[in-house]
Length: 129
Image 1 (cartoon, rainbow, N blue to C red):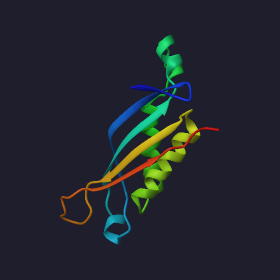
Image 2 (image 1 turned 90 degrees about the horizontal axis):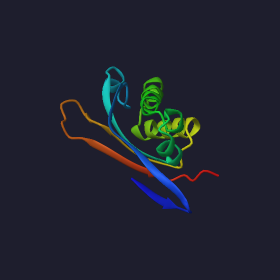
Image 3 (image 1 turned 90 degrees about the vertical axis):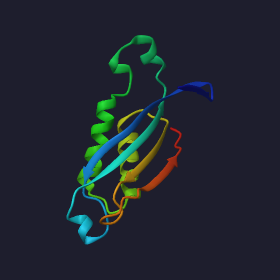
Image 4 (image 1 turned 180 degrees about the vertical axis):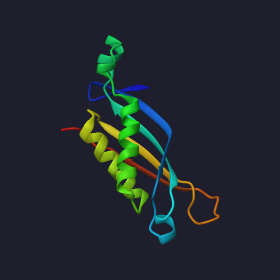
């Protein structure tokens, strides 16, 4: 998918369903277990050079994006998924030449025995200076 923004081509890399096993939560019982977080990300960047060159060095490395996102969350063991989402955003912006990132972080267990899904959708638009 691609669109024009201020005369530049902006493409999107979409990563859906990245499962990160980590300690997350505020309650004592949550701090004692590993829970799955599910991440969806839409990363907007200019992929014109990669589409013309067919060279891996000219695109974002999808595997590295996933590794960074997972490592940042696992290392932090956040209490809040809002904080987990912010950590991922900061890490990706500091590592890659991206224009915007939209992310969705979900934790699949909100209380022992509960099967409902708590969902946090945060969209953040940051334009590179």
